[in-house]
Length: 408
Image (cartoon, rainbow, N blue to C red; front, side):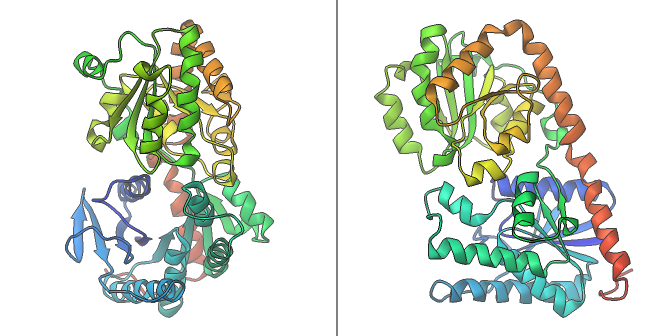
């Protein structure tokens, strides 16, 4: 079975988006599927028109697209659709599987209709809500409403829809989409990459000034919705109960400057350490320095509807996880069993949850084991990817003669 994945961007760029794409394609390869990816014009990393990265083949849409807002996006859809058709006529996939944003979904739907190939559209987040979350958009604005309408059009045109969590599916059902049309493919972890925790690097811990700990960590992008300002504000309260506590922030992003300024003005400034961005291959070394990974996301539509990837990676690394009590986190963990939940937008609640967790050291081994087992049983890509095959086969069975026959 040949599957063509339509993507916004891909490896060799590193992001949560590209890592999920890599995991999906690798898992499908392991199941015996023949997979390729094609990226739209927003993949701006220099490289050849056809590129192999980590054993995966990606085709690039090389068209130049210009114009005013609105018209430019419509031209992007057209350019990507043309590129998909050209590739499909040569490579002959059985299914086109597009991944959000809606521009990719609409391009895939347009190409699928021209080719007679079924289309799956997978939503990782509603991009209008993501824009609000990263402070580049405003809920209810004209741009917000137009982006939402494009999403509705992509969903209506696709033969089947996948979401990464139940929250997104429920929202689509509330819009009038049939539940039977929507499947859920939860975020996952490639346990061949994140299954064996690294040993603690004492020299790195000393270089970062972490002392004896306990060490609270965050590894990821510094967006406003991540709530890292609340985590920094929680540190003086945590230090009052555990004077040796340290906060290790790994990554970067739009809020980096503001967070560093906040930390510098905090009475806990000496306990807050910024490690900067690190290569993905080095991430395990930093996980190994921490005792608890904290995810204090603020409450919003985005965080209530979308499940993040990082807590699952932390669980796979046998880390304790403390997270704000928003919908996306509740879907990933059970309070007191696989993680600890605390009230969002509340530094004191965050601090007290972390301090209480540190006080319960004797329970750490059981909590770590339960979290790791949860990831292994429910969020292992190589196990969950079989759900895609069921969807693909259902589409091909219902319309066996409406597609380009695969090459021998």
